Length: 77
Image 1 (cartoon, rainbow, N blue to C red):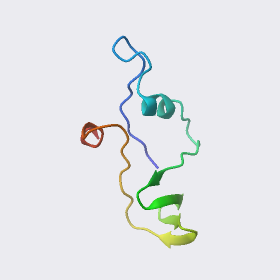
Image 2: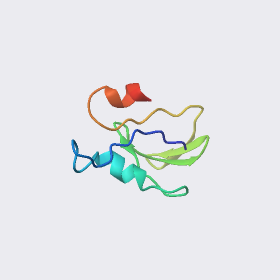
Image 3: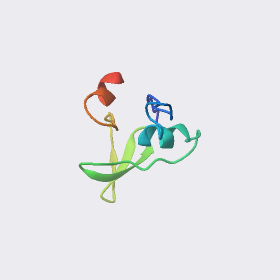
Image 4: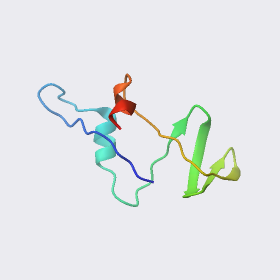
């Protein structure tokens, strides 16, 4: 899974930085990231397979997950 995100690291305007930015910037290749959406939890098993509600399913496409506030998060990607 590829993850593209804009970093909002601590600075004068945002002393604590962005909550998602800080966590995502610390991830290393091979780390696990649990995502949860309006459909509930799912596990990405491989590039074409997920487990949703305990049932393994084959998928052709995977949707975009956006964090942050407002519409700026998905528009920036």
